[in-house]
Image 1 (cartoon, each protein chain N blue to C red):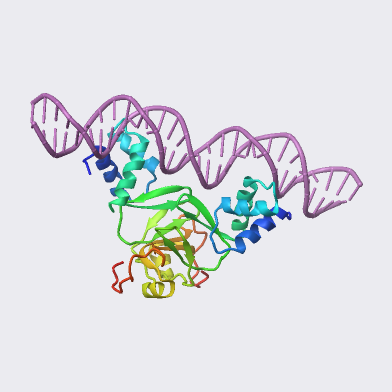
Image 2 (image 1 turned 45 degrees about the vertical axis):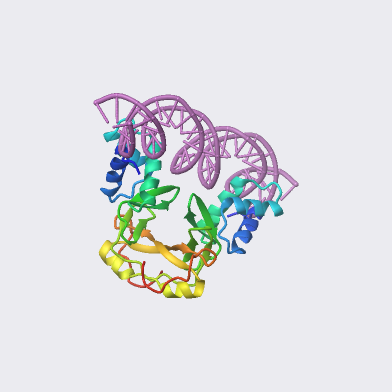
Length: 131
Length: 131
DNA sequence: TAGTAAGTAGTAATGATTCCTATTTATATT
DNA sequence: AATATAAATAGGAATCATTACTACTTACTA
């Protein structure tokens, strides 16, 4: 693949934030460095960066969000403000059972825990397992 | 909430399939019962049914899919054909750790295992933990 | 059985993403 | 260094899922 300054800038933007940005946010950041960069270029390069494993993506409500952290990690999502928080929790599922019972070959996971962040929870969360 | 025949039909469609349909598929099924039902009605009622807990939804690529199974369960998603398979596997994560370490109040989860279904896996999946 | 507010059909608008194409640019070759 | 050329870009048009709008219909209340 040929070098592209636009792609370098886009990669650095995504990889230096923990905000899980969407394409439009990356576009606006990129414009600070390259005044006439086009939105199509941002979308194209985000896809390229994802396909070569430099970044990851996931769907959040009606948009795609990008993540420079390609390590296996879960996200917490607040239903009030939409904030996405990285956790250091690793996926834990019975891989052998999935292979055996479903004849499925697992490659990756997407795990979101949905609830309320510390700003938006209404009271001290009770200790009983209501989920 | 007032009774609506359209909503009854939509509920029955979503709750009697395991295909995780999108709004358009539900719309086409509903037309078999109500010839002039409108797409907006389908979208509106899917949202109502979700908000009162009758069905669930999740984002899959660029669309929202609906699920009449509101039990806690994981999905397997094939990257080749896109099929979504229900599993009987329950979520297993350290709820107390999330409450304590992140001051987060968990209410729900979304867990997808991405890989290849039995039709599309290339060979017998090896037993080593490469994930 | 009439009143009325909720729900609907049909269509227009929106917004994220993709597509298209003339122009620019990285890089291999002379 | 100058040239060729295929890849990448900018800018704008097109697409497609979803939402918004509005005049009409209908479930339910008194």
